[in-house]
Length: 245
Image (cartoon, rainbow, N blue to C red; front, side, top):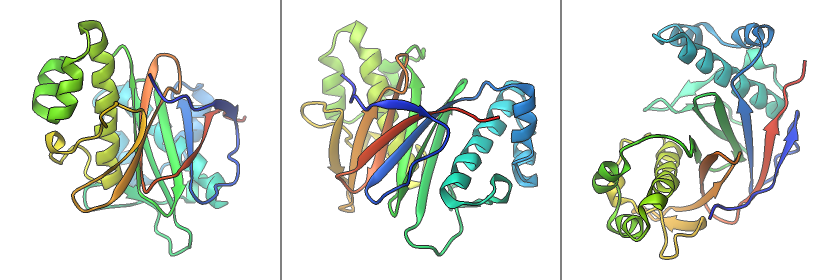
């Protein structure tokens, strides 16, 4: 069971209020004309990074995902997409250099031809998305990277159910690491991201005493996503981006 958050289509975001998380899903398959527009949104450093990809499909996806992120950020900040400039945290997590209050936080993820973006005010957050059909040797990863409680819940499921459970927990682990700004460079098998009922929306506290709210949702029938946000009591507004022009 995945948390049922209502999704609607939109081309512009509503006002971002305190204690709200805005989720945006978007396709990375765009027209040639749209791609050229996206490419012009990136700065020299980002284009250099894009050109390091050995596969053309990966280069195109990076450009589209970064440009859509800038497009959404510009609508929240009132800036032009081309004027958005990121700084990077110690492990590469991008953020906007600003002294404004409240501070806009964001995170993004993509898989194949789909992307997901998350925004909130004054709290760290992370997001991850996967296709439900992703092929992975999940039993090996579970034994190495899951906590005892997560392993117990995995083994309690039938063989047909285990891949779905694996993806639900793995997206939580990815999203949590992204919220921290460390990716998956943390002790995944020591951070428990499920509760006794395997709820799809619940809160956990880490070793530092920081509370995190975990929410799972389905941006589309064939996808699963997790959002991890610092604090609790968040309201969610979820949209499928419709590009204008």
